[in-house]
Image (cartoon, rainbow, N blue to C red; front, side, top):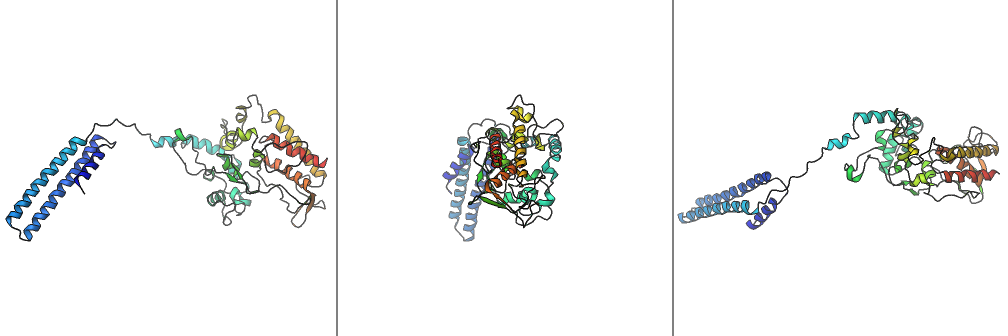
Amino acid sequence: MSWGFVASGLCKFNQLSISNQAQKSIQKKIYAYFYLKCLWQTRRSILKNRLIGENNKNQRNMKRTLNYLLTISALFALAITISCEGPEGPVGQDGQNASEVCKECHNDEKQDSVSTQYASSVHAAGANVGYAGGRNDCAACHSHEGFVETQHTGRDTTAADIPIPTAIACNTCHDDHNTLDFENDGPDYAMRTKEAVTLLMDGSSLDFEGSSNLCASCHQPRTPAPSSTDGTYAITSPHYGPHHGTQATVLEGIGGYELAGSMSYPEPGASTHRTGASCNSCHMSPAADNNSTGGHTFVPNLASCTSCHTDASSFDVNGVQTEVESMLGDLETALINANIIGTDGHLLDDSGEALNYGSSLNLTIDQAGAYFNWATVAEDRSMGVHNPAYVKALLQNSIEVFN
């Protein structure tokens, strides 16, 4: 190692943004190291010469060399100290106590409030955990264990049945923070996923671009609308339909059986609630004082509407829910009269008995599509709020099949 290389490195070291006192302390240790190294190497040479019987002249030469090296090392240390040390830099800003950032959310008051809200939610109730939470083809949305596993694997089923499934909990939807720099990056609620969703009904991708994707992971249909090459359709399962939770596709304006009729269908993604709102902005609006609505109850309250619909006095803004409920009832009546469903809403077979595995219900494709649309709107449960134009078109055109 050359002395020039060492000197250059020490000069650069002196320019680092650390305190002057810390610099001097480290410099002293470096100088002491080189000083002792010079002494050790020189004494080693002297001892070696003695052992091999060098003459006195060589010993005197080595002593002179020792004095020379000691002088050089002292001058070197002095030169480095004088020539490289610059003025002390400005005082840095004090860091932020990281625990203060955490305590904005992780505190007793917040915990108690969220826990009270969540305890009244359908997610916490886990009504279907016992029935579906352990089955490997249902667990992904009906148990905590299933959701966590399938989000990790990217599959829509678990590897095996889950022996002791549990209800959806805090750490089902929440995982690790991606950032704690909320000031620059925005709030990070540690959502388990925000990635685009692969729809179970047809494998296409749906992206709400945010935390709504977490909700859409489960609040989506499993079955596509019926199709046929000959105009007929046979229903052989008593559970036929889109399955529960059609909210994501209704909001997007897709997934229904789009019959030709008197009403046209809006473009997918055109609903105002799709473009100007999110699952959280409506279903997690500020909680009521008694924690009965809003927040982690996931039950909307009127405050989620009045931010846009300033004169709203109920969820039935512009009479949408009243109109959709009436149309849904008309379609249900038409399905009952056509012996497609019973008065309890369950499918019938060709003989008019409750449809079971082993029997069938043979319909025209449009009749099957009308039933599918009735189930889609009923399972959405918003009575048209998610996407009024799309829902009205599905219902009206389906009613016209039976007229």
